[in-house]
Structures are given as C-alpha cells and as structure tokens.
Image (tube, rainbow, N blue to C red):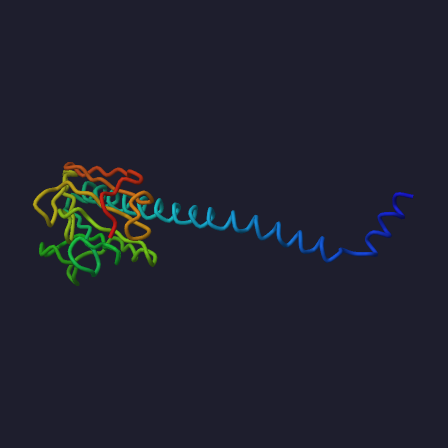
Length: 181
C-alpha cells in the first residue's frame, strides 16, 4: 500500500510552490557559501605566493653554499621595490648584479596573479644575493628587509609578510603588513 502511495506521488511531480521553495533555499545557501569560498581562495593564493618567495630565497641560499659562489635573486621588470613581475635566481658570473647572457640562470619565478602585489620595505630595491657563507648582500643599505604580499590595495588584514633577517633567514607572518599598495 505504501508503495502505491509513493508511485502515485511520483506520477504527480512537484508543485510550483515546492519548486520555488527549493530554488529559494538553494539561492540562500549559495549566497552564503560563495563569498566564504572566495575568501578561502584568496587566502590560499596569498599563502602560496609567500611560500613560493620563501622557497626561492632558501633555494638561492642553498645553491650559494653548495656551489661556493654568490647567487642573486633579482626582480623582473617594475620600479624599485616592486617585485610583482616575478624574479630570476642566477649566478652572476660577470659581477654586474644584472642578469644577462654571460650569467647562469638557475630558476625563474613568474609574475604574481592579477591583483596580487609584492613589495619590499626598501633594502631589496632590485636584488638580494646570498654569499657562499650563507650571508646576504642587497641592493639597499641593509641586508634585512620585509616583503609585503597583498591581495588587494589597502587590505592589510588579509596579507602576508615575509621577513628576512640580517643573516638571510626568512619567515612568514600573516596579516600584519604595514601598508598594501
């Protein structure tokens, strides 16, 4: 008997009101879920960019120690302290602090995704280099600096800061960038 009732109900289908209520509930759930999902994606991209920068600094340091020569990390394009366009890691064979045909390219990191920015605090205007001892040199007056990675302008809460100390060790801090461009 119960089977017959279910079969009869399935033959009738859904009423217009049942369909509208279902669509309304789906709309409400989506309006809650989509903004949270966008925030998660942005947060993951910030973490990925910060980890990529730290990996490149660690790679340059380890290559300098392993090869017994100075290894440069130099920004690609942009003005001073603007690293959004990516960076090259290379051995500067001619000693001019510029990547050219005479140098040995070890790795290239591409530009950040649209909307994401990577800026330095001022000591790494153009390049930073690791010496065979693991210590650093930079294009600025000091060897310690901070990289700020931001998803949007003026959003310092959702940002990452990569802090590089004077002996060349890098670490990540979340949400404490002083400014975002």
